[in-house]
Image 1 (cartoon, rainbow, N blue to C red):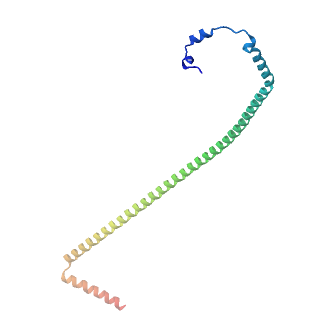
Image 2 (cartoon, rainbow, N blue to C red; image 1 turned 90 degrees about the horizontal axis):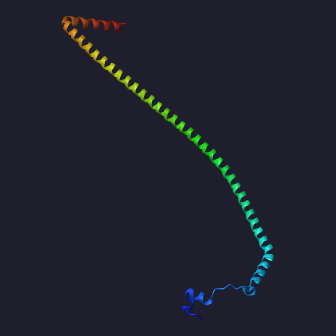
Length: 179
């Protein structure tokens, strides 16, 4: 076994110890053996290597074509699905717009109905207050007329005139009861 110092000896030591020279002995460097082995491998391995390589390439091409076919089918299915989704989205959009228009119209109708109800209520309140005011005026006019008539009667009426009026009315009542 070599010592550590021999293994890690400087490179200049090994170069000077071994010396640099070109070995021209063909048998010693095994050039013929190497060429012979490589030619045998190339001759017999050529067919096997080429067949394996050809088989690998054809398998790769076939796999690529299958993947291309699958990808094309998936793309076609995705396009069909996209068209269906777009149609469904359009239907939903149209339905939403129709629903929105219907709800808007319902709100407008409800607001119109509320407005008409408020208008009717206002008109009824005005009529009621008008009739009440008319009734109050009638009562005041009637009371004032009664007061004036009484004042007029009291100022014009003497005891004798008062007695004549009572006698006249008694007479009328008797004539009515006799009939």
